[in-house]
Image (cartoon, rainbow, N blue to C red; front, side):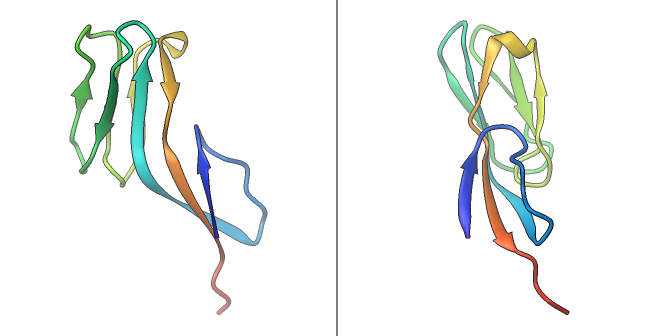
Length: 81
């Protein structure tokens, strides 16, 4: 088990990943914003970026150059049937 920070980590074929923190930092106003539940849209104070989805999905709004991804992913081995 390991934690990866950032957008969609690379995983091995025997691994699976689960979102455990859905957050970004706005590079314009330096505010860290986090979506904590499904359909919980949060926008930074300057309005340049936003994040949505809680732990169900990660959706980021805004220009890619205006934010830093702070998402955290729990990566574990797939369960054998």
